[in-house]
Length: 547
Image (tube, rainbow, N blue to C red; front, top):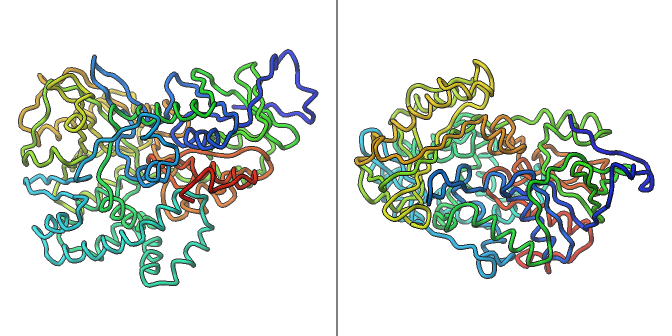
């Protein structure tokens, strides 16, 4: 168990333990994308910032690896809708694209579904084209899709602004929504499952499945209550901005943030694991990296999962610690495969899918697909209705692979802990390897030119690997914690912690996917930095021009 170093006076620190004290304004524990964004804003504001990362590569879930010479793969995050609507990118607040080398490739369609009978639907950025796709199966559904899409687009600026700032109390946000007809529809969606919203709107099974699988990327099952609002965010983002991926892989995002921090005088240290916090009379004054003491004059930002908060903070109010430990994880996790191919895959459904960022392969059976999510929930690996999602960024970004070859990302939902053996059971070949093999076999049914002879290298990561990679991914939950109504907005991760502060511990702020606005790559550290700036009496308009 972790134990933070607590004392009552700054002068009674054990000199043998401490050694030379390094002094910074802000010390950041963990270099995930959220905390790096917070560090970048604070460095931009003139603070002396140090970021400490235990791994050799910064980024948390936003990393790239090379599984064969010349191939760049993203083993975790690889799609970036929420990040693109954050003012850090959209309004160039950190100059990542104009000064610090970040570039994007874009897709005219973010998501496509190919069914087992060869029919398909594509969600284009252009709402008209998307409605034409829906009309292939139902004109009524196309009309409903257009009306819902227009609603979602109209409220996206409010939702996006809310995702990039400290959250309102949940009750206040719901109350605000109740003042208009569209707001009341959104408020109702907060209390429904996303399948209930889908089922109310659409009749064709193809349309229902297309949207159902899309929404399930929030790592919640279709029948989980409190997930219905995801449709508004999803439709709004997907029909106002192209699908986007960083040129050169996920690491390009992190590299640009590091350059931004260093440009403003900040420092980054890798292979530097923080072992404890230095707490003086309830105030977090710095950190320890082994025996090295690093002082933080203003604050410490820490990526501490709610389940571990009591371990890091001796003396934390027992009820706050217990409430944090009771936060629930997502309905399911993921098994990811990175595959180096000797040639680009060709879809049996047609080459139009080369322009679609995410392509999912789905069995046309609504009830069976819904039931699969129960398998995940109860820790069972599904044996039927496999539905892999494939991304081939090489089609838009040839820098990711040698000429004429392809870096394939193959993804599938998975239980977090297995009913037979728990999390560690993923290490058994009959679980992790066998499941990955079945997923690959399912994918190969939908391409015409790929077999085992075209595979140069293959890398598989299960929920156990995700758990081991990052302390933010407990039990392999890549979203940190679940994303239901009870754990969103002013209740993420709990009402006591939602403003990024920890009651009873001055000078400590939280960052990570388990904080508002939630999982995926959101650049949520902007909201952490904004809360800190407010507490320090700094000019928000100077630091956050789009505020």
